[in-house]
Image (tube, rainbow, N blue to C red; front, side, top):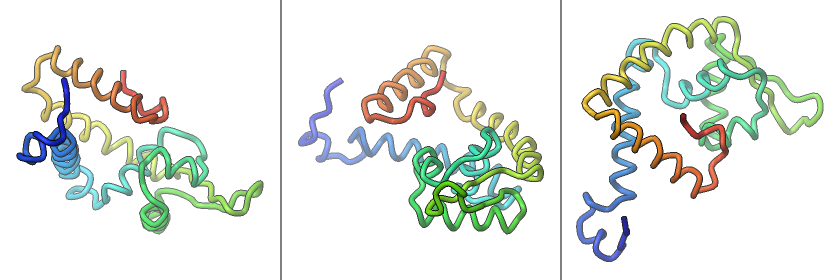
Length: 157
């Protein structure tokens, strides 16, 4: 597949980067129906809770990189999660410029409650795709992430 920018700019809807952004945004907004409307979590809070519930303690620099959130988004979302008692934020004893984030038991319990619902919604969204289309999509996303130099932990199976 060749992407010729001059031809694609004539029609935004067929411009690959635009299509990718629209698909990702629509997919994400559909998933938000579960964690936002039912549990009151923002997309940024969900990303943090997801990562922190699966990991131990994570430093702010790694957390920002792995969630694609900027410093302001990370700070605000983590403050809201801390206020809800879902995570802890502490200054690193080794490097006082960094904060260490960790999910609380309450945060892990909430994640365990929400995750199956989000998985079910995601499965519903892609249910009309064939097995081959799903595999091709995953392979294509992995290839794109690799081409962009994304961390390996972002690659799906």
